[in-house]
Length: 146
Image (cartoon, rainbow, N blue to C red):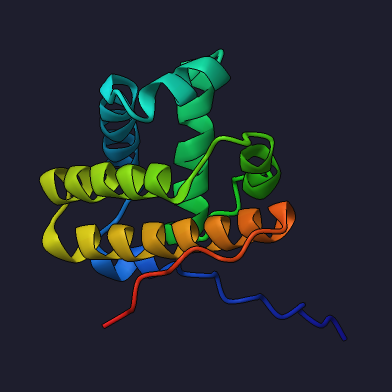
């Protein structure tokens, strides 16, 4: 008697229902980081830390694909990378989020933009809490979710 191994149902990320696809991620990420690089507040930090922008953008497309489409492509440690940068403050995160929200709203349909914004907010809060903990600082005030 031959038994067929049960197949696992494929994982469907939250972005699928919102209309997020790989092409949308590949438009959003470079457009957003073009704004970041031009920003006088956070641009110099990124330009100093990133040697290969093509590689960085590919890695961030993998990150967002993993977050919203559950592809599992991202292999990295964002907390460790950000922890090396001692000068990052809550103001830097706020500016990053402001630019990200703006870009998502410009390039994505409303439901997809809302999902990108919500996930970015969660990621930003998590990174800020982790950095504060690693530095032995009190946590920054976080946004109140509505």
